[in-house]
Amino acid sequence: MQKSECSGGTQLRNRVTGNCDQRASSSAQIKHRTTVQQSKSSSSTSSPESARKLHPRPSDKLNPKTINPFAEQSRAPSAFAAIYSKGGIPCRLVHGSVRHRLQWECPPENLPFDPLLITLAEGLRETKHPYTFVSKEAFKELLSVKSAPEKTVPLLPRLIPVLRAALVHSDDEVFERGLNALVQLSVVVGPCLNDHLKHLLTSESLIIIKSKIPTYCSICC
Image 1: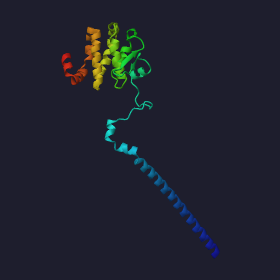
Image 2 (image 1 turned 135 degrees about the vertical axis):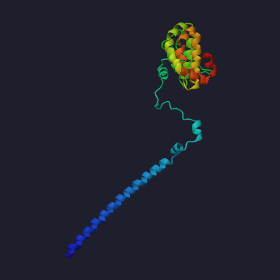
Image 3 (image 1 turned 60 degrees about the vertical axis):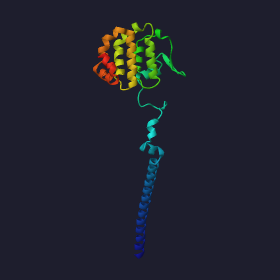
Image 4 (image 1 turned 30 degrees about the vertical axis):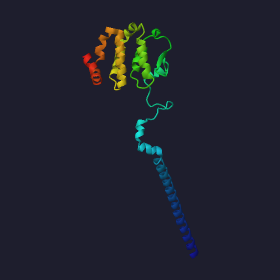
């Protein structure tokens, strides 16, 4: 009887001891995992890249990151940029040592103005090179051909809204390109532009023009 009681007590102690060992092992594994996670988070936080994000340097504002042309852009390209990239504009920029110029695929006087002239006018709102130069120079060179008046007048109802969008643009350089294009257009079409001035010089555009060049507004008014 005593032997069976002793053996039963021994088995009970072994079970209790085993349970304790299992709990101790589980607790040790949990502590190990927590320590590893904390070390990973501390190493990522203490990295130079994360520290730079948390505390940007003053020079970061002066030297913005260069755009990676092979990276996927978050913003879709503009209509003019997409057309230019696909070869829809029959001219290309030629970089010179002193100044840039355009090289046309064929003489500009042989090109149809519709829709090329309107597309170039839309490109005046671009803010990145080479689109800014191409749209401005191509618009001017296209209007300089001998047949420009007869090809341009029918397009005025579609050109005026595009030029108005450039005149009310927040970027000063876009506004200047739009204003120069309007002057060039007025030289080509002459009095035919008068009927479209009410659509061009709206109250909104006059307010913006007044804020940028008050003398021009006083002449128009």
